[in-house]
Image 1: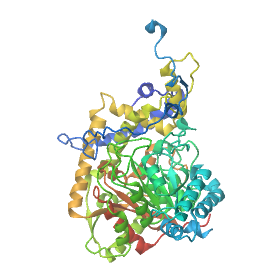
Image 2 (image 1 turned 120 degrees about the vertical axis):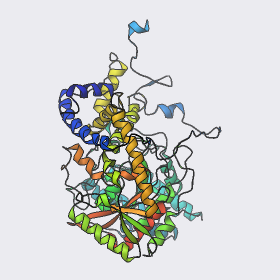
Image 3 (image 1 turned 60 degrees about the vertical axis):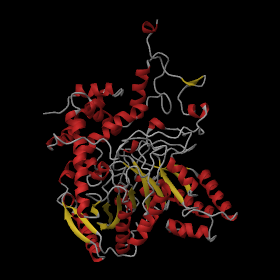
Image 4 (image 1 turned 90 degrees about the vertical axis):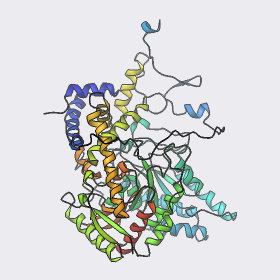
Length: 101
Length: 491
């Protein structure tokens, strides 16, 4: 049985903000199915009482000394932006007019 | 072939320091070599000719002024295109960052500059470091200098191929599941993955933040150790950086080179010497084990049963982290933007940008990660993979109570022909079968050339406990002293 359907892959693509083509959906559905069936092997391991590891280094919050150091100028920070205006990143419309009014 | 390009970094640094050659001469020799062979190898995505010569002149001026130079001053280095380089294009092998010139240097790049090394340029890689063959680069594949019809490994195939083609004596890579060690193995070069947190991730374009580890690539173990010493150590800009000094890897490499391993206990990972590896790879590995034994090492077999589940666990954890990390490529702050015609919404522009900017393997991993993290599947996939990660760490910990270091072949096969695995993504994943456990555990691992199979290089992997990077350098240097280095046929 397939682990994942073409419709589910289309849903994942939407969640992932990928405007995939119909042709890609056909290819990815088969490939993701093979990959997901293979990685599902982790389920064979008896690990009910095992704590999860998210990170190999024990992590605690790290704060640096509150010292002023040089940082990027606005021009440098905006230098790679596809679009900028008035020292800000310019973005496409976020809200529709109905919502905005 | 000019003598300067066939030298080790150690030899070049000594000649520059002694005034027998100049950093400019050394740099020019390597730039000439790149011009002569890189149209066939394609190790570089960008060659920074002017920047390299300027850096070399600065070293020569400092020497002339009587300043003391560092151990690698004047030595050229190739940097994987995953690290931000101020003013120098940084693409991560992806169209989504085409043309991006970062406004800052990664910590490792900054340390390379301060040490007086000369950055030749940026090397090719699988897009976002996702791949094992460099065929997933959006800018075309890199070819293995041993056989141009074969893959140089990945994701750091460009860095490894640059070394094997004598285009650079040193290179920087990054290893998330084997991307330094596997290319090292299949190109007959040395590649070391430091302890996670032992090298800074600041300025390294993130793929899987709990696994990504930048590290050194070289043609000899000592050169790799010298580079490790220069780039390693605590960085306040990386919150997962370990606040401890780098283990003395240079001293360890020199000790290993004496060829004495008396008292060193090595464990062969039983699970990695079974049917999975090619017979030629196993033959070279077995001969190397004999050599290590002759040098005084005590070699036993050690079983690490959960290593069998490292590959599936990795291909859940890494894509999960990737799906989150790569959300920043939204067409707003840097890189590509597609479809912004004044009518489309931010979300539509974002989706068109990511569709156009990412290649197929990146899309696959983002979707796998999105799936594994979604509420209905989280426990069975991502949560379970994290538990398996705990068990793998326990296997390592138990093994290191019995032995000082673990050994295995680095890869199950020699370099495979280009195109052999691109149609079957899961087959591609299997190239990292033996390297992935180390990443999940967080310890160091090194691949050192150990022989040839069918005329192609085979690598032996040494894995050590966390923050015991020196141990793996000692064993690798000892093996190198016994089996020598391997030179590909003339290009």
